[in-house]
Length: 227
Image (cartoon, rainbow, N blue to C red; front, side, top):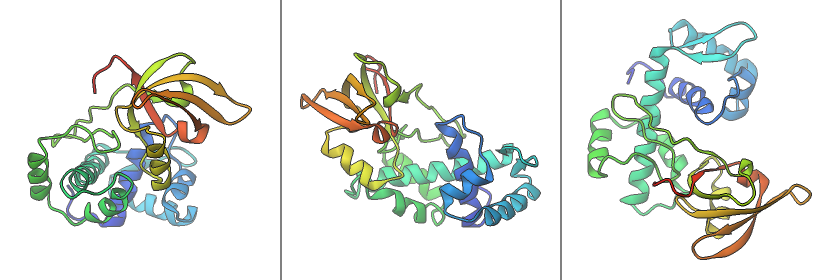
């Protein structure tokens, strides 16, 4: 961890890294402004400062990218965040829809020593409560080769590998449908006209209609792959 980085700068680096973790979309000031809730001018100024520190590169009108130093710092924050989320769920009884904001605050306050101790206590988990891979201490990120549920062909049998944690209401909606991490699903029919995806949940067996925006937040792997 770069100890001279402010919490705000850590957040910028983490969002740049996270924006590319599950998407090939280039990271721009507009995308960062949307994700962080700041004006484009505020984001542009912050990006310039981080580029001057050697943490980002940003060609004029081009994509924003992390340098090696920026990636190390970003992955360090991601590691702290995801270990904290896992600890809050597994040890303190938080719901998976409650931990994101808590971890957002705590990730800037905990030491690497404490994070390592939590990692040891948890048995070195490889993913957080939403299926996002937890980076190793060395910075490796063991991401599964997953795809979004709404892209899966009709008739395919899949298993939930990851669910985006950016919207607590979405997590509660999916939990009500019994769609959780490692849930087995069979895609029945994509209904573009209704904006839904008909899916059979394995356990308990039931047919549910998942809104396509929600299906975009669910990442799956073939059913035979082990969690």
